[in-house]
Amino acid sequence: MSFEPILLAPEPEVEEIYPYRRVWRTAWFEVLALFSVALALYVLTVFFGVLPRDLRDPLLRVGVALLPLALWLVSYGGERRALRPRPDLLRVLVLGALVANAVAVPLEEHVFLPERWLPGAGFGGRLLGYAVTIGFTAEFLKYLVLRYTVWPRHITQRLDGVAYSLAASVGYAVVLNVRFALFTDATLVATALRVASITLPHLAVGVIIGFFLAELWIGRTAIFWLPVGLGIAAFVSGAHYAFRAIAITGSPSVAGTGSSPLLGLLLAFGLVAVLFAIFAFLIANADARTQALTSPRRAL
Amino acid sequence: MTGFITSDDTPSLSFVQRWNTYLALLMAAGILLLGITLRDSALSATQTFEDLEAGVRAQLPSGWLLETGGEGFVVRAQDPDALPFKTTLQIAVLPIGPDATPNTVLDLLTMQRAPRFSTYKEIARSDETLRGDPAKRMTYAYTQDERNPFQASVPLVVEGVDVVVLRRGQAVIITYREERTAFAANLYRFEDLLQTVEIF
Image (cartoon, each protein chain N blue to C red):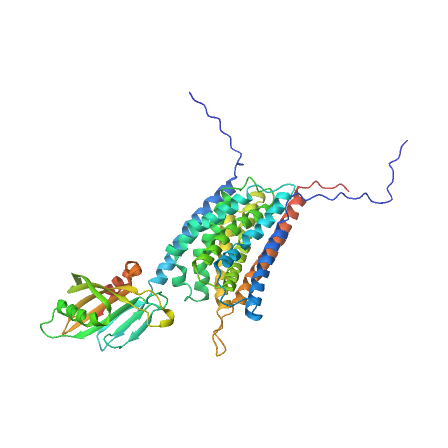
């Protein structure tokens, strides 16, 4: 006759090693670093006068335009050190940049011409106009990049969609940043603010596409799931443009023109913070639900 | 017989996933069309201008700045957003003698403009019909310098076109002016104006 030994202390649970790069952590690092640099340049220039207001050094401007890429490469270093690095991330980033330069920019400059008809439109018109022109174009191109490269082969979890969409978004935004730095005569601080207000919304809205694509592969979705995702992404993008016009262009007064570039930066940061929080919650929730459905039930 | 061995590591898609892809592509085509339609309707939106005294009614681009009753014209519309030259549409009415023809009116315009506009040069004249009436079209070009010394820049080459039609003892001159590189792209605005202008 034998007895099972009775443990006085519970058996220590073995902590499961997470083999992938933590997407939200690195994404937040990129967002906060870019926001901090733009804010620091603004404060040092406008409030403390440490940097001259008319500083227009082209090298510095291009350097600021490339900052999101540098920050992403830091995150990419973490990806390569992970136990299971996500393949083809760099390829997705390069493709994101290529479609921006080869398709989005010509479409904007020669077909949609938003600067000629949207700034004068009302809030609703601006929202709809930007959503169906440059907003939808950007998100649809990012979707195409992901859909025909890494989807669904490299999508094993929902956060993979986010990681790849962030890579495509960084590539896309960097092209717009560099074009702004090269083809305008903006000052360094204006370039930094513009770079942040281009990159942060692209990161934010890109997450929507990544989530919807990953869910399409992993979860059980409706037949119009992807069009809904694209529609939401385009709408959010259009809403950002519409609100940015209100935020940046205040009402002129005796004291000044009412222009407030800092509000534009805060709006971009607010958008990225809200969307990151929403989709982190949605993904955690969906993952927990999937795990509950797939894990074997414990016998009582 | 030649045999092919193919390998495909792409997982097969379900019905829902395939149709999501198709619908996304359809949606993109629809949105592209909607975007272009919205752009067209915004860019070609017009406002009605009417001057009962001069007897002119026309559709002018919406959102443009209108100047009425200025020296030598009934109405002048300028695109406030156009850079570096404000795209201009203008309607002028000129009293004429009984022997005047569209050609003589154009000669008069050329004589008036030559001393005012730097390097003014007539390019071509042609016959055309405006709402059943014989008319004359003249294209020309000149250079325009920036008057503000703080915005010194290379002179602009401006291209213009006039259409002259005679009505009841007066000549109606419809004019379009634009910076040379954008002239052809915006010429449709002038053609639209010619289609809508009414002289009564």
